[in-house]
Image (cartoon, rainbow, N blue to C red; front, side, top):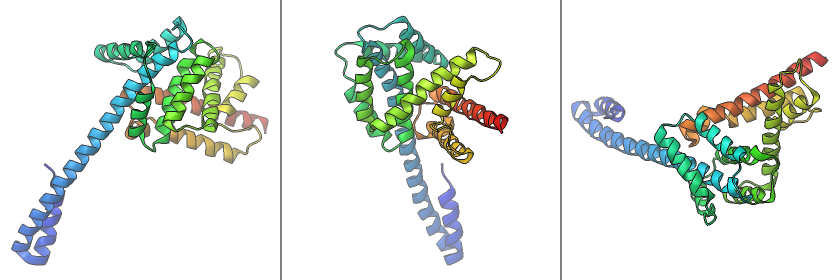
Length: 266
């Protein structure tokens, strides 16, 4: 039971009309508490609906994207399974994710209704739409450069989620740079290579000639966009928070590399 309205109503009512005023104040406050409770309940249900829709759409579209080049290869399957394992699904959730992935692989499966429904729930939450695209691009690059079939599916995603061509190219470059950046890091070289530094600039969507202030501004914008808690509050399924955390860590690593490189060169 909510008491905020009743307490405030009782206090204001007593000051304006003593005991009789307090009674009326409690009644008015009770109505407010009931309305507020209903409002919060509707908001929570809407958020849960978006989170469920986002999760289902993720694996359905992954299946469609994996099959878009004619056959699902081992690299795509491995990455899909890897994503599922990183989400720490329960056995029931894991089986459901695999079922959705398999459904998406069917030749007759149409992703458009799924994406239209998802967009209607996402609304103007641009960061959420872009995060969805980033996740799908990660799968698309599992077996190498994008092919024509994958590009067609990605185009359908962009059209239905309201992502324009310029936004797609920026996100696409960032995802490929993240792949290359992590590959360089795994090589454990003695120092950052020119290629690794170039990827770091691409991840932050900045140029080497940009000022420290501009680079910091872009870094903060991307960190805010990929903040795990903020994405969950906007409708990202809680279990996908780990993916957002990984992306924010990559952005942090890229910024740290650029900052340290600039300090060294001064």
